[in-house]
Amino acid sequence: MDSTKVVGHSKCRSRGNYPGGGPVRFPVSDDKVPWSVDYPGYDPPEYTADRVLQSDRSDEDIKSGKHKFRFNEVDKKVDRRSYTGRYPVVNGVPMNPVGRTGIAARGRLRKWGPNHAADAIATRWKRGSNGEQVVKEGKPVLQFIAIRRQDNGETAIPGGMVEAGEQVSETLLREFGEEALSSLDVSSDERLKIKALVTELFAHGDKIYEGYVDDPRNTDNAWTETLAINFHDDTGVAFEKFTLKAGDDAAEVFWADIGHELNLFASHSDFMQKVAEIRGAYY
Image: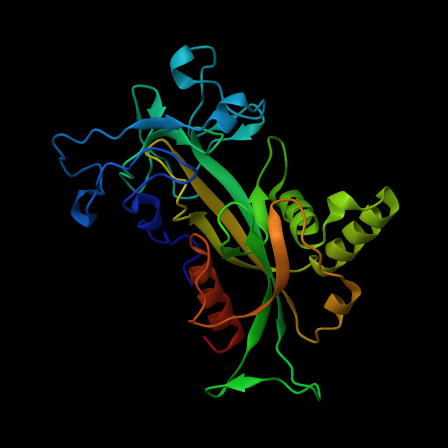
């Protein structure tokens, strides 16, 4: 499996308004996506959400000249390298490595260029009342811990953005605890117990994907990339130690069956298909 293969570029240029009440995207047809293709008259609106501008974790305005960004490098604590390789920088502004999106500037993303995320895909086999594996079309059915996002109501994998100076492994542990186990809402002792349990479960995982994500928040100058890791509990016993409880950005957390019927946020359905292929499960 090629874990660096780019996953899609359609949700990030869907017709209509940019997510969260942004402007209408400038239309970009399939043949006009690559920067190498001439597109006379291409004039995407510039948009950066107020929440991004007001956050102390966001980049400076690139036009202010206050910060000299080191794109395609590690810039102090911020890793501005891309899983896709070197991306173009035009007049000091990073350009989406996949192509046009119909929106310029940062949208709802905090960083210019790649915004790195981490996704924790925790799976188990679906079992019947007698403990037997549930089979569909001759293959066992996998389940994963899913969340319902508060911002758009879509079903997704627990995950989030890598903070400056943070290792991806730390992000996986933190985001899974916060979104699927509500670790922010418990005592410090309970938080330590949750961290120990998650660390034990996440000691071994299989890389499913690293690269560009077809995220509806992507713009011409800011985009999401992720490292998705599958943590599989073959017996299902390890997950019995957990009490799923939605927290942070999750409105709901639950076990969901993996299959082609799934309609998930961003590129998450593609990740699920790869997990099913690796595990020999139904999809």
